[in-house]
Length: 346
Image (cartoon, rainbow, N blue to C red; front, side, top):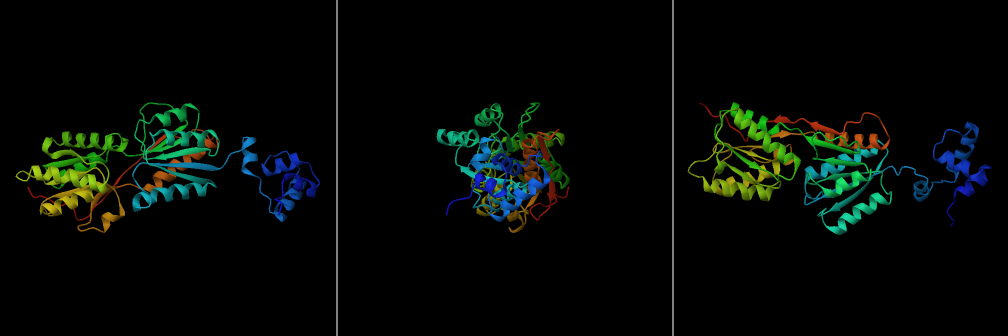
């Protein structure tokens, strides 16, 4: 069956094809009576204009690209899966679609060309990136071409780039973690840092250091290590660190995120260390799994729905040429106390 086109609609409505185009694209210079007549025919014949035609006239696609970078598989982790759903829901509330692309490595040439093609062919109005490092040449390139880019966990201080929109974790959660443990009487605190190519891990490390210095706590190398951002890396880092200092253990461990904290739990179990009797543990994120392990995890939680709604709304506001759109927003963390920390009596 032949698909009805704008010429057919024009003939049935008794108007020109350009009038049909003006009605479909929402132009104001169409008499109301004519608009109603054209819309009646459109509804009767269930006519929808082809996207390719709209693109040729510079019409918005009402589509965002979501570029999911790295190993944080959306199908295997409830927290990262929620990131995806928050983005889709926020876009839908603004009547936008999301074109999702999962890329194992954004530095590989074929992936770079793939992302470039999607932007340059005008398939999307803007792209949202999750999982990039804080220095990403492809992002800089796209921004330089005046493409609108939204970024999770990405920020450059004192840069005025209106088409680069970001949302970030607060810069104080590490210090708040140290404050919390200090208030419980802990003075021997270990830190497992994350991937220092990522903004949040950089800020959290700096924040831990500020907290330790503020409270005049010892920064002992044997209690400082790196554990990536996933459980396995956290487990490996914690087991190596704790095995090397069994004769002088810290009383608490700050894990860069909840995934790393779950690795700490595993390492402590294998080494016969009890949480929180022997070691207290604090994470960061607010991962749902933290409420279902024993003991429940104390963490500094973030509202990811707020984060991604903020990002999507500001990206769309930029697409739609709204004024005074904030380029960067930082979301504050909230303490969620579980059973993984104990008070030390002085």
